[in-house]
Length: 346
Image 1 (cartoon, rainbow, N blue to C red):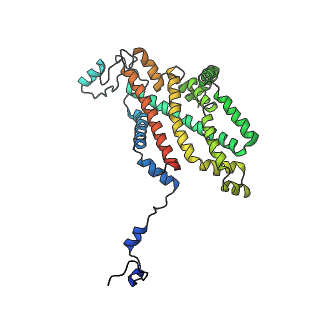
Image 2: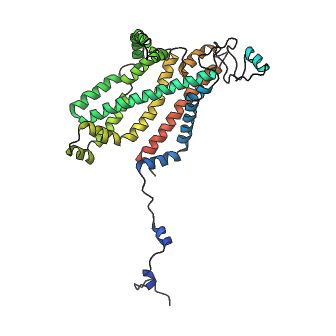
Image 3: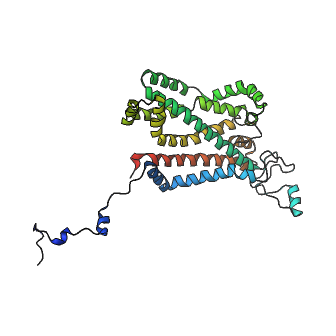
């Protein structure tokens, strides 16, 4: 006889242990994962960010690895090979090929001095990437320390430090770079003649001035972002507990506050890299960048603009590469921001 569905009576089968299949059907919660693992998982799912990261890795490979094995160097001048079209050879190289010798073509042609343009593009992108990465580290260190100290102590310390930030925002960076370049030109040239400081003469006083300006001016945005984060975190229970246990202010800032801002720091630093690369590129375009014959993408574009109608590829190549680098870093930075933002979790 079938049991009445409205009856309160129970059958013996109702008290049997649940099977494994029934247990698994009741599991609705996903496995617990850490913040970093969850962020990485969401970053990997972002196809645009992954494609951008792949492009960045490929550009870095061609910038830092390939020139070491490339048959031409960036400063090597070849007589009779001036202004060659892409994938062509000079008369002397054609004679060497006819003699049975293997000669690597000039994939992007040569410039007016007979220098292979492909290797100069690769070395130029290396300079631009190095400037962007070093500048981002400088901005990260100075901005994170300055902003965290201002927010942690608060009061008149915060007021004075942030008013200094407001004043720095009003300083024109290009004018300061010009002034510093003129003021440091003779001292840096003298320093470059000393043993162990040859790199100063290689990169030139203009590029050193750019790094100085990055250290003086460009950290203010990072400082404001870190300050806003620390203002919230300093009221947390673990900060109060650290103070009660006798931890020093430096340890609290370093171990507790900045550590919990690491996601914001990574995203902001990544987005700062393309900004630094663009700054270096347009300064080099204006003639305030690296010293010749060392190339950068901005200086290559500046040199090629005079022959834009005759040899347009000399301008198109560095301009496209600058755009590609900046776009890739911006898209990857957006992907990091989406991955580290807990409010965007689905």
